[in-house]
Length: 120
Image (tube, rainbow, N blue to C red; front, side):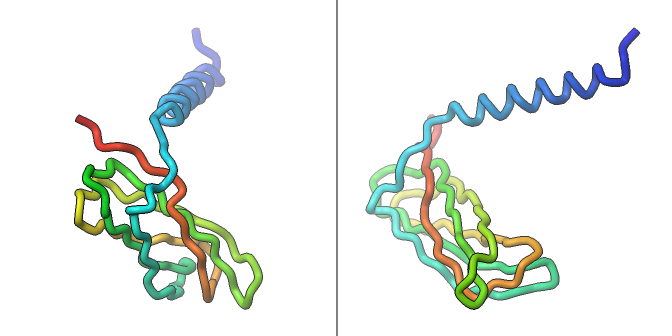
């Protein structure tokens, strides 16, 4: 007989195993040949949104690139949010949006915080 806590412990153990597996993937600092571009920021009923893109100036496909943005409102910190852009081929541009939930921001500073190489 299992206790009611047994499924919860199993779920937590599975979640921890997945986290440590993903954390073990190689992450690299951004290559200077990767150019980050920030779009306009706007608010919607859910929060603030900023379009971001990365131009790949390297000779290799980028498997993934994490873009993290620090949002501000009237010069004060409003929060931070990230997105991951996948499979950016050489000479091309990958794009996405960064969504800050629950806050209205009027500016953001974004950086490429991690990259991974493309899988074989």
